Amino acid sequence: MAIVDISKIRKSYGSLEILHGISVEVPDGNFMVLVGPSGCGKSTLLRMIAGLEDIDDGTISIAGQVINEVEPKHRDIAMVFQNYALYPHMTIEQNMGFSLRLAGTAKEEIHNRVVEAAHVLGLFDYLHRYPKQLSGGQRQRVAMGRAIVRKPQVFLFDEPLSNLDAKLRVQMRAELKTIHARLQTTTIYVTHDQVEAMTMADRIVVMHDGNIEQIGTPDEVYNDPETMFVASFIGSPAMNFIDGEVADVNDKLTIRLADGAVLELPSHKVQRGQHICLGIRPEHLVIAAMGNGGDGTFELAADIAVVEPLGHETILISTSAYGELTSRAAGKTRLASRDKVVFNILPEDVHIFDKETAIRLIKESQ
Ligand code: ADP
Ligand code: MG
Image 1 (cartoon, protein in one colour):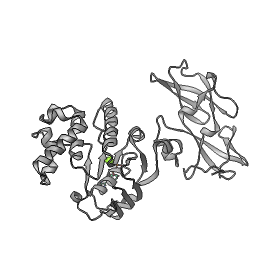
Image 2 (cartoon, protein in one colour):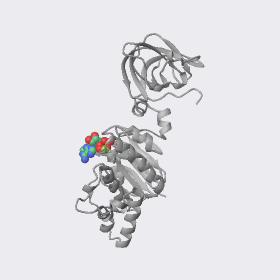
Image 3 (cartoon, protein in one colour):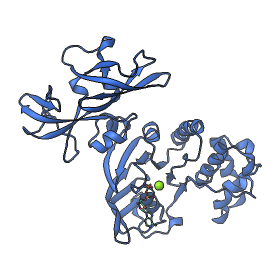
Image 4 (tube, helix red, strand yellow):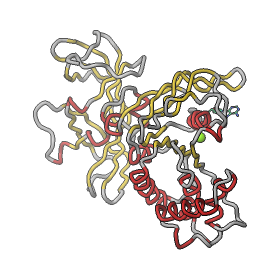
């Protein structure tokens, strides 16, 4: 059982604290993705788990053993980086078996493990080639093969797909998932790409400025973001935010918007006069003229500014009394720049955040 328990981890470089007390438990066999913008401390945390950085404060344990003071090579983990350097003068087989050879593993055992990993990765026919004779995706698989042959308790990945072109990245995403389903090794995967996080993770850890904003399944972080940061970071195009003020709280919550418009939402734990932000995903701004809407929805008027056709859908960027609004429409649209539209919105699709703390407000019933 390789549960990875990260508890109250802190890290500073000089006087600057980079990680401010990070705690997260990675369940056995889980594929956990750490996601956040560049510079938020993902690699630093991963390198601390690997033993490449000292732990200033807090503990990390793997399978119940605190590993703070354990040598990297005795932690029984394997790490795959973005810049995987293969040895150019070694065959794929030698590259994949290299760490086992260093560890003094018997030749036959090395061969067996390399062949087994090569089958998992679809590299069996390439074992006698040299790195320069492989494509970028195959080389990335070799880098993974080097980790797999060691049969570690934990895999650590640091943006392993960032150097690949877009198409290959999509393919490797699916391959990594398949490999994980087969090996079931506890995995911590770092990326700045929320699509990778959403598509690959069992659980996502959203990081921001050295703190954890939210831990949850892809469904939870998308549908129930706990902070405005998570709401805006997960999902593309990003969630729209509209400023408002609480006008009244009874069994309904009455919000007053910038232009004086008033709308009613399910009751939340708020106070009259409190400044809030309404978060609305682009897919929840539904153009009224298309025959949607109905009872209980509220309306926002806007002017189309930019139409971005993507083939399967069209992204519309509009201006409104509440600021810029981004929406999506299925397929093609006849709408053009300067057209006037009305968006219908269902009250239950609106997320409500406190303007000051940027934290989601709790529903009265919860
Ligand atoms: P991420 O992987 O999320 O992009 P990093 O963990 O690489 O972020 O870096 C987090 C912060 O720590 C950044 O501000 C970075 O500049 C700083 N940092 C990382 N390594 C060092 C170092 N060796 N010395 C000083 N600052 C560092
Ligand atoms: Mg990094």
